[in-house]
Figure 1: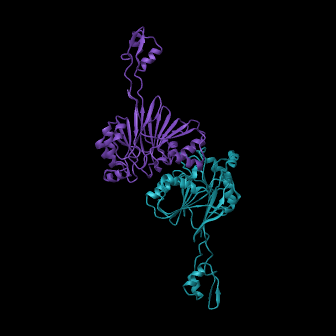
Figure 2 (figure 1 turned 30 degrees about the vertical axis):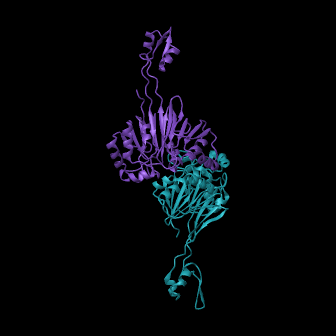
Figure 3 (figure 1 turned 135 degrees about the horizontal axis):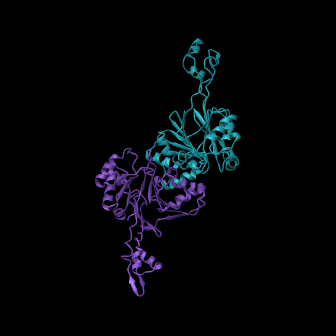
Length: 302
Length: 302
């Protein structure tokens, strides 16, 4: 699993930072959090491709988080995309896309647009789920967590053979952590299969002021991507506008005991992010400033 | 007068080329032809500023020519723009912007959106006019010419003094090329004022297949910015899709006797533009390939 930051600016882009977008590549699938203006061109530069299996999660309907959608969909259409695409976002995203399609035409590939009905699991398959919780920001705004399900523990065939459990469906059930019955005797998976290996968790704040529910959602996440629009001296403005300071983001990362914190949505007033990083690291040393085109690996947990 | 190319890609952006936008700075005013996705960020990089007097001319309602408008207007609004802004474009541009404003909010600064009613002069002040003609492209599409009015010729005060014409309103009228009457005698401006100096002309094709009317509009232009989506081998496809080859653009430049031709809207299939340039220069040697952030000066004519 790899994260590529495609847009790390605040509301207004700067020379080096485009509006919000974070791409996660997981087993070939592209999971996009937000799609600010210019995302498609930054996808070209990052060589992510337009034909992959893909889902887009939109945190809220502000321009700097959605204005890359129309162009991205149009480019996919021109490239004769065949894979379906699902877009999850707040109420109103259907109207926004319909208005755009009315002018630019409707894409030919299968497109699902799903308006988030409420907090909870908004997507799930056999390998991971995406949860949404309300963010503290103007209008209907969401934070997201991508949570992998635990992977089965390592299976030890020699142990199964010792116990005369025959290779086949019984091995499979044991590997899935379930007990099996053989000749009237029950065999527990313990000793034959190691404990399940935890899945990974990536949490994306969207735009928000500090949010206790987000701290809970981010508990022990591998990566927390949290907005840090402002420096400490603008904490009142941050609260008023539904944003966070770098310090506040670090406090959430510390409380949630995450592995790594990446600060994004940096206001254009900070051409240097030194002060933001310094303050955040005092509270949470594993803090990094996200930069456009920065790539990070999220290793499997053992 | 200076031209900055802000987007020179075809429909799809590439690593180096963003979607269509051309900025002309004239006496501090910014005149923008088209506004593809990412234009605002490229304006930041080109240090053009968001507070200037400004007009935007939109050639047609395809995504690669308009999807930068919403973000640009939003950024201007956030920066508390005060100058009014006028946008001229094809029928439907009002609906497009209204749909966007419905989601993102209406800008607070004075915004005029004018749908082009037909070919002819669509803007005029005391110094220049903008003419629009129909382009050969899908839907309602326009090409534009920015045409400066001639400037008054150089005034020779010593000649006026020799003729005993007193400094004051009579000098002013002579400078404007008008005869004056003094003591019952008529003085013609010839000999006192040189001939008017021609204004400059910049012509922008938008998306179009070769167009005779555009050749006429571009007659003796200082700069013709013409689309060159394709190379010669795709001339049929170009015709079908309402586009031009580099060769065709050069033929128009030659027929119109322009000073310089800049090719833009280059398809993403040409990472190297060598072949396009070579073919065009065979027909019109003063051809150049426009590149994002390229700046060119248009000197005053003597």
